[in-house]
Length: 271
Ligand SMILES: Nc1ncnc2c1ncn2[C@@H]1O[C@H](COP(=O)(O)OP(=O)(O)O)[C@@H](O)[C@H]1O
Ligand SMILES: [Mg+2]
Image (cartoon, rainbow, N blue to C red; front, top):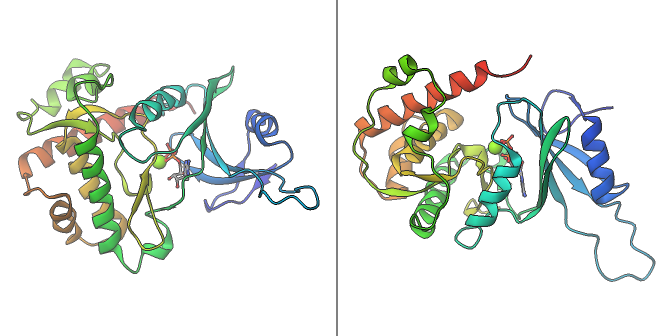
């Protein structure tokens, strides 16, 4: 079956997703909302919504099903579930319903969070507000989640461990740590949800969340707002809203690290 969702290209719904959607919500609707460029797919699942006559309770809230086919170099949805459960007392993230693994892929099911992705067209007219909210959301996470008890790492060492020595050497030595925090791990604009008024609502997509220098997040988030909203002035806006002075050396290092790791991840993508 081919369905058109928010993503402009038609999306083939994998058989496994049909089976999971049937299992979780019966004959409800399955709407593709997102396809990442590593093969992962996200669907919004909604109950059929036929309450018995006279029922006063609305149908169940919608849920999001992220599906990662076997072999796709995306973060593991089951590992993401562990991170969501760990971080949920400290910041706003989706509640995990279930996660699992089958022969042809792995999945994560979460409750829908109120909020709209910061890349939604409604925020295009006010990119400064969206930019500030992305920064404020990261600041809330960095200030609230406890480094000492976080079991996950996202340091340059952990991120480059699987790379060939020559590639790792090419990235260079990390600058001294400015401040260790629990980083989001994929702090690009689509992974922040905003309220209708543009204020921060929640973080999604925390499959790489872990302890690292805060510039690991700030370097890529500040570049992401500039690219998404096509305005170089937003880098300064982002850093001011987060509450930090620019640090060109750490920004350059962590952007290079990100680009090299992503380049190698893409080379692992099965065709
Ligand atoms: N629980 C949720 N509540 C609301 N929106 C969600 C939820 N989970 C995912 N989304 C939406 O789906 C998109 C894709 O999910 P995400 O986890 O970011 O997948 P990917 O790893 O492919 O980027 C998000 O950008 C967000 O808009
Ligand atoms: Mg995402």
